[in-house]
Length: 400
Image (cartoon, rainbow, N blue to C red; front, side):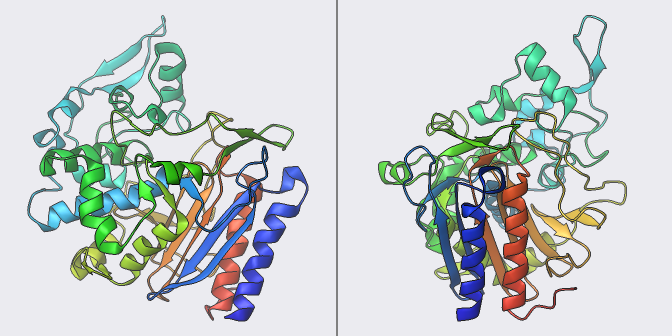
C-alpha cells in the first residue's frame, strides 16, 4: 500500500504544480475498498487568491455527483412500495403535467410547443429519458435562457425546473434536470424536504458528516473556491460563485456540498450491496438491478456538447466505447483504458469532480476540483491517471 500511496501522491502533486494552463489550483482525491478509505490525498490550494492549503476535509460543491445520492432515496421509495417507477410522474408531482414539448422556434423567436404524446414516468427521470436537458449541453435550452429568461438550475428555484421537454418522454437519452424532478417525487412521497430525507435515511445510517444542501459555518469555512479557466488556459478565482445555501428547491441533481470523505461512505455502500456501517440502506436485489443498464435499445448515451463554453467543453468518457445508464450512474459496457471493468459505475460533476465504483474488484475512487468549464483537460487527464494508477496498485489488470 505504500507504493500505491506514493504513486497517487505524485499524481496529485504533478496536477497542482505545473504551468498554470496545465495545472489545477488544488485537488482532494480518495480511494476506498469495501471496508475503509485506503488513500487520502490533498495537494495545492483551496483558492489561488489566498493560497490556503487544500486539506482532506475541504468541502466541495458536488454538482452532479449529487445525483446518485438522491437516486438512492428514490430507490428506497420503490423498495417500500411507495413509488411505482412506471406510473405517470404527475401522480406524485402534478405540476410536471403542465410541461410541453419544444418543437423549435417560430420566425419571431417564440417557442413552438405542443403536448407530449406520452407521460413522463419516474423511471424515465432516473434514466434521463424524460425529455429534460441542460442549457450548457443543449442549444435549445441555451436559447430559452438567453432569449426568454429561463433561469439556470444553479439558482435552485422551481422556475428553473419548469422547462419544456426536448422530445416526447421515452424517445431518447438526454442528460438534464431529470433527477431534480425525481427529488420532487421523493419529497411528495415522504412529506418532507429532500435534505431531511437524505439525512435520516442515507447520511446518518452511513455515518456521513460534512454533507448538506445548506452548509453550516464550519463547512463554509472549509469550502474550496470555484476557479474559471480562460481561453488562454489561465485560472481565475471566482469567490462569489456558489450554489445557494438556502435554495427554494433542494436540487437532487446537483445541490449538495460535501467533503470527499463523506462520499467515500456512500460509495462503500454500493460496493457492499447496500449495506452500511449502521444498517442496510438498500436491499441487495435492489442494488443488483439498479447498477445495471436500464435503457432501451433506441436510447443511447452520447457525447455532451459544450454549448456554453464558460461552463463546459465537449465531454465524453471513453470515446468509442459503449456506455449505458443505470439508476443513476453511467455504466461502461466495455473495459475502460483505466482498467475499469465492464459493468462499473461512474459519473462526474460540472466543476470537474469525477468518480468510479468498481463493484467487481471492490474499489471506488473520487477526484475533486472546483474548476469551470467542465471536462477541463488538466483536471480530467489527471483524474484518469489517478484511476489508472489506483487499479495498477490494487492489482487490477490494465491493458497496455
